[in-house]
Length: 237
Image (cartoon, rainbow, N blue to C red; front, side, top):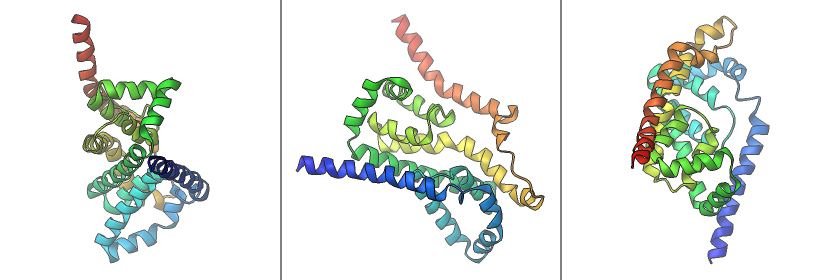
């Protein structure tokens, strides 16, 4: 029975990987800014006809996009701002991303998480270092890997599951950790109507400008502060 359960778990993980690869191949060109511009009128019409249903459908689609690790999360974030404005657009974006991330987290923990965690730790590299850091300074590192994407978003969903993080803590740090960056790109999306009308593309490098980057780095430093305090105290002891 235990072997059957393990086989089912591994089959689920294999299915998730297969869907991600297939989705990346099939949807790579469809979830783009050009596709958003081409479907602008349809999206606005759907929002005007059924605003609540459109909002629910958008959050569900965003969650599915993240849960299946499909491409286009950035375009989805822009779409949230484009359809719903900075607020509640940023809220819809973050809720959808968090739900999708939690789905990946739960699936990873259910599907042979201990065995994969051991392999990652033995293999070394950045993933192993992040895994060890999460176990040593859980909340601080969970916030950091969201504020400063030192690992891909997909891995940031998997590694906490392998480290044994509680689901509630993972959801909380994901929601608030991705909120600053989501706010920036949602605000860019909120101004897309004018950008599309001029036949231009949005400036997605805005997050690397000083007025945006400095506060983000400040938040990252604040999240890392408990790690430094703990290390200093450890040396004193």
